[in-house]
Length: 391
Image 1 (cartoon, one colour):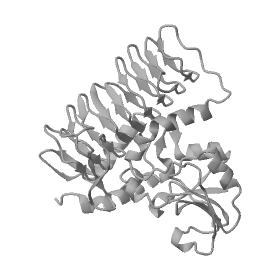
Image 2 (cartoon, one colour):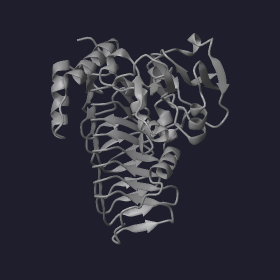
Image 3 (cartoon, helix red, strand yellow):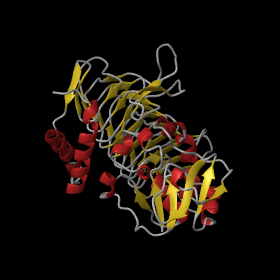
Image 4 (cartoon, one colour):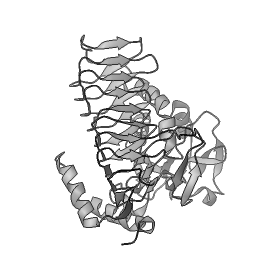
């Protein structure tokens, strides 16, 4: 039995962790949980916030291996974990990585545990921008793991291949009249996905199951498109978790977009300040804008949010859950969850109207909002009320 616990960075990873445990964050070709399940050859449980646990159940409170979910697995780490025994904790640079115990502990509660040091390289996702910063390498690592000893479907002769890198196309996928450049990394096309004519794609790149790259799209390396998405226009070093659409012209770069989002036609999201200065982004734990030490940082949009056509986002705009953004001009660079408006100002998005919109979008994929999900979203609505304009 193995549990993945959220760890100390859950609040720093908001707004994406409002609606999911850390383990369900997508980077590379899969979610963190899917990576751990693959490396450990088992299904993992979740140790997360109470309001999320109904949708993501935990394990029984008995002794087992518990792993910090924000860590990207690798072979050396897995070998170290397999050697852990009862009452031991694995630590790297004074940071808790895993332990074997019967309860959920913080590092400060584990004084009696024997410390086992881990000295090998390890990637830990601490902030939303760590996702796109580490995505190109995660794609390369995942490609080797998930396609090992497997054979790609044939690549149509209508495509133009640049470079001698690796391309893997799953069964049922369609790629025609595209330019696929593997000079800087591999390209993975998921099951039943489609790349339409005229698309220009540079690796490393992954397209999830049942997703579509539309005609004439320009996609640069370090980009992940999750399952059931439609994307077009220009995308650079970005992650789209799944079930979201950026189907038209417009630009996003160095960006993270959650699930069930819709980005209107001709929307552009800046990823570089005009003065080339260091980017600041909203921090939920600090409740203020903090330095990122980055020059490039684009849109960070959580689940169920959407924007109208020709929306313009300033550098490092953070959008919460179920925001509805429209109108001319640049909206503020922190948009709270369940907000409605634009550059002219925001008001609170009525929850019943918001949930009706979410139901309508999910119904397009023949999916529904069950009582557990509605309860979770209502909790997020209440949690985020402190940030919204009072009506």
